[in-house]
Amino acid sequence: MTARILDGKAISERLTIEVRRAVDARCAAGKAAPGLAVVLVGEHAASQIYVRNKRRMTEAAGMRSFAVDLAADATEEALLRTIDRLNGDASVHGILVQLPLPKQIRSERVIEGIDWRKDVDGFHPYNVGRLVLKLPTLRPCTPYGCMRLLAETGEDLVGKHAVVIGQSNIVGRPMALELLMARCTVTICHSATRDLPGIVRRADIVVAAVGKANFVQGDWIAEGAIVIDVGINRNADGSLSGDVDFASARERAGWITPVPGGVGPMTIATLLANTLRAAELQDAQPRGSP
Ligand code: GUN
Image (cartoon, rainbow, N blue to C red):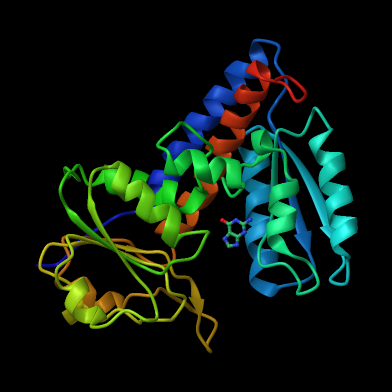
C-alpha cells in the first residue's frame, strides 16, 4: 500500500480562510479585531522562524499582531511584568509565549501568569484541567491541529488503537487526551517504554512527537495505519525531516503527513482559531468578571 498524503498546507489554508471570514464578520458587526501578542525571549533559531510565521499569519487572518521581543538575558520578573501588561490590555485577546524559554526563566511561572482567557496555547493549568475534564476549553494548538488532520481522513476513530510517542506538555499529553476524547484506546510511549516497535505495530493511529529525525521506522507501521508526524528536525544540509522515516512508512501506512507541509501549518491555523475563540470568550466574560 502507498499511503495517501494528509496535506496540512491545503487543510490549514482552508481553516485560515474560515477564521478570516469570521474575523471579517466580527469586525463588520462593530467588534474589535482579535489581537494576538506573540512573545519571544532571546534568539533561539527555530523559535525565531516559528514566531515570524505566527505573526505573519495573524495579520493574514485580519487580526492585530503585537510583537513583543525580550533579550536573551531578560529576567523572569521582567517577563511576568510584560505578561501582566498584556493581560490588562483589552486589545490583546491572546498571549503566546514561545517555548523554550532561557534557563533563568521558569516556564511554569510564566504560563500561570497568563490570564487563562487569553491562553491561546491552552497550557495554563486551568485550561489543561478543563481538557482533562472534557470541558470546552482553549485546546493546545498542535494536538488540536492533529485532530483536524485525523478528521480529514474521514475514518471513524472510535475504538481505534492510537499510539502517541512522546509525553511532552505541548504535544504528547494533550494529544493523548484529545484521542481519548475521540474514544480511541490510547497508549502513551516515552523513553522508558519497552518494545516500542512492537507497540507501534499494533497501532491504527501513530502520533510521533519525539524530536529525533527518522526515528520511527517503516517496518514498525501496521498496514493501513494513519501516521501523524509532529517532528520538525533540521538536517545538516538545511533540509527538514520528521520523526518518521517517511519513505519507508508511506509504503505501509494508509495515510501519512509529510514534513514540511503536514502538522506544522496546522499548528498556526489552530492558533488563529483559538485567538478568535479567545476574543469571543472575552466578549462574553471580560477580565474582572466573576
Ligand atoms: N514551542 C514549540 N511549540 C510551541 C507551541 O505550540 N507553543 C509555544 N508557546 N511554544 C512552542
